Amino acid sequence: MNKARVFLLVLLFLMISLALYDLGFAQTIPPGYRFLQSPRVSGGVLIAGRPAQSASALLIQGFQEVVPAFDRRPEALASFQDTHGRQGAGAWFTARIQGAPVCGLALAGVTRGNGIIAFAFDSPATIAATLPRLFDLVGPVGQDPTSGLNWRTSPFPDGSGQIELPDGWQIVFARKGMVAATGPHGEIERGVATPVMSRAGAARLGAMAQQLPMPVLDPTDPVSALTGVWAHLAATAQQVGRPAPRIFRVIEAAPVSVPVPGLSQAAYVHFEYERAGSVHRALAFAIMGSMGPDGQWLFYQTYVSAPTHSFAQNLPILVRIWNSALTARHVVQERLDHALASLREAGDIWQKATRGREDSLQRMHDNWTEALRGTRIIEDTLTRERRNVNLSYSTEIVNQLNRQEPGRYQEIPLWQFNQR
Image 1 (cartoon, rainbow, N blue to C red):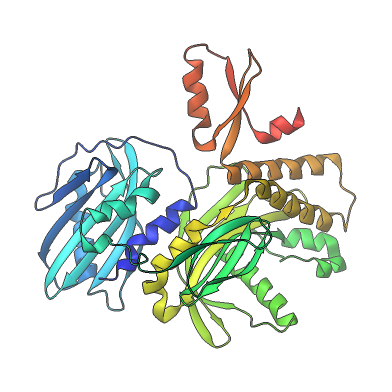
Image 2: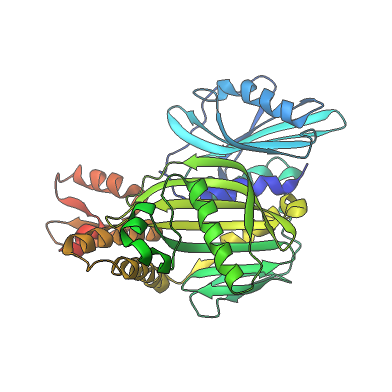
């Protein structure tokens, strides 16, 4: 079975942060399964072995068999398999245990008529870190295939961050925390925000719309946004004589909820593209921002890719590279300021900014800043002391503090703070 699939969920869940829940497993263990745990890692693994001829069929069977272990049948969000679905298959999933959400990865493998099915899961807030260690409990299926490479830490040329790369890889672009790198295993691009103008906004500009240095797209869904932005970038590349990537097939898209203000939709997108006669497969996380009053919005993407024939085997290496990228803290604010400046420049082509429009753009900018920083200000109204806390848990923290002295503590969203 291809070990690269074990690390797929790590990439997906490192791009978003969900609420933290304690995981206590007190459900019924299904017949024929064992439940593996370790005091050194949270979560657990349900595993069973049985005769099987098809990994895909074993995976489907497993989802039915493990229902007693959860409050209800686990929900498969995205699946994958080998060419014929006979030797290896998997799916990442969500479920609930005693009302608390969990998520994880299900894997099925078949060799010479013998099959193994495993469900590794933990709370949404910790699964990204614990998943590889959970599969270490199973055995060879969880071993890290990246451990044999010679890794080095490479600073971004502009000093805005750093990334861990194996031999043969190099940074081809880095600016204000954004980075792109290529090597013998494929390529990665991380942290790119693109200003976009809606069709209605472009219509108001008339002939001036042709001078916009941005795509003209409506924020209908993440897939159309991704393909539209890539088409715009391809046209730009062709104008300067560079090979232009062209998305020709979307394999699967899995929408996810976006609870952060200032963002409208998000999805994981698995797709293929062609560039200079070579076909590549990519996995991207695409996020759409809310549209401003003049029709402008932000599109955020990060992705890993490799030639289609080697994508599966190279995926764990791409994941480790992507996950190692660190942006210098001072760059986050600068990068968002630059994106906001681009939005304002396009809008000022057709009208002088009004105070209401500026407030709206500033609010959108502040919401994006909070989302990317992952923090929110809370204030002690008695002492006026302020501190930053995790954005995902800020409401819960304030509620807990106010249990002792009701009304003393309050959240201050960044957009409200900047209006004071």
